[in-house]
Length: 518
Ligand SMILES: [Zn+2]
Image (cartoon, rainbow, N blue to C red; front, side):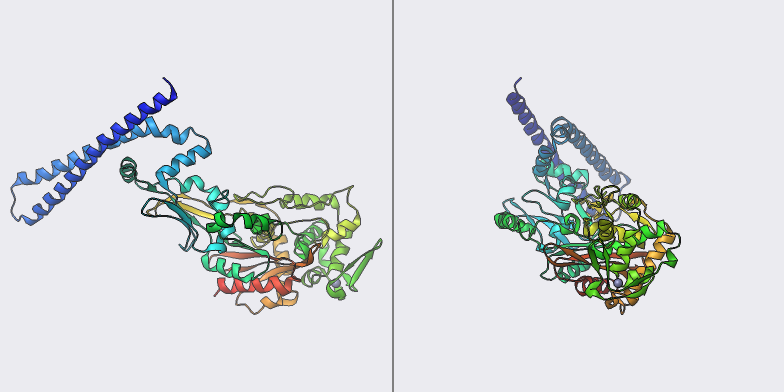
């Protein structure tokens, strides 16, 4: 038999089955009504004959028998005609089949704001809507013009309906669509709004996450776009990709020189190579020369006598370049490798690979000195920098960042729960404590004193990353303890081409911590 003939036969069978079941559904509905009526009568009658009770009981038995037969029939029908379509087809075909049966589910924030939903008009036309427009574009992704973000990663779940099977069956048999499952994210709608707005008209990105779980509470990237308008604006957006790159999720895909935020890793490497790091001393006169290369402290300012914590708090480039001069390049590389440089981040979202290029036998001392202050050829994404900072805050253990908390059916029952996962121990508890103390000193007596009057004890590191495209990129990575949740809240902020970390990124961190701890 040819494929067409098979399809025709299948169509006839399906039609016949539908008719049969429609008759059953009608009968069931009628019986249910009769039962309800009978129940009311029963309650109204004060004195009853014993036999009168039996009537409704038999009716209930018939109804359940009917449901059972109907479901048995339905599942055979499903297995015979539909499961093949659903299971055996390639991804694209599968989602096509699913979207004929299911109305795509919603994407929600952790506090239940609707971030994406499919609206169906009276003619059955579906529109994917994004009530917050540009604010969540990169965190949740888009549906049209090539799915991205959660719209891509949770695509099949959004197109799967886990409401109770009788309802699915009713809808299926009567040709109606079932409501798809909803994706509940870890995002906090208030923090997201603050993070997005705090970037102002600048290009840049913000990541906010919990150190002990890896839960992403906010993820913003600017410039942005409205995922609900991509069909109309596509040509324009593509043209902008060459200059402003609004489609790029800078939080996970943007790669930047880390600037002085990299001193966290340089300090750690120095501590590992020098048992006597507590005795480190250096006399900063504002700059350091090496074989014709000069590295300056910010504004050529001399920091005088500094130890390791003071070098760190004041972000003394001269002292850190001096540290870089003596580091074992092979060991430095090995440590950065363990911190996930030069490899894909273990995250369920599109991200770019951070790079650390210092190599034994290839890189010279000059490059080592540049690298030690976060210049050189090192590149990092804001998400990766958040993960490194979180491992300091989390006593040395790095957690896997995640943005989907759970999947629930249209009635709100949990279908699948995601939980936090450990990537690994990045440093000892003692090392993490020492670096945390130095990061705290950045706020009490260093480059981030603008955060000192907050009601929580913030620790962090600023960075101003020189680049070929103009003014420095402004960085801040840091954390503050949420004692109620027994974790630290981590921020990683970059503002492109504006100037120093203390001037631009630190005030954004301030707004985020203020909102979180208010
Ligand atoms: Zn200095």
